[in-house]
Length: 82
Ligand code: SF4
Image (cartoon, rainbow, N blue to C red; front, side, top):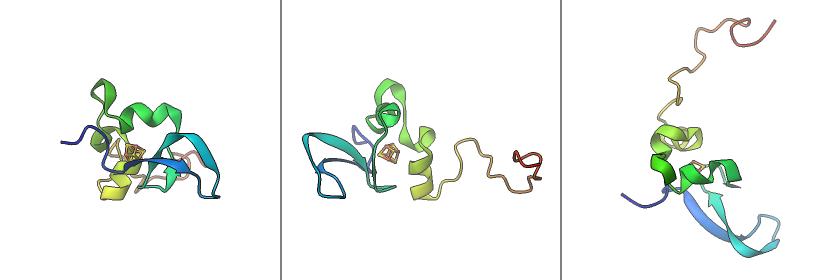
């Protein structure tokens, strides 16, 4: 098993061509730089696992929601509507 998420890359250049002094973590599952709060999941630190702890990973793999709740059959009031 790899040490990091299979969708994790390191990039020095942004989509707009901007260059960075240091490499930044980039998620190819959503084509975006990784938010700092998510970096531990991407790096599989503290027993975190993308397969069970990242909705982007699960979305890319078609694995469904982390919570198992997909909203199907939800009424407007249950979903936060009026
Ligand atoms: S955000 Fe999720 S899918 Fe993307 S690299 Fe990190 S763990 Fe993997």
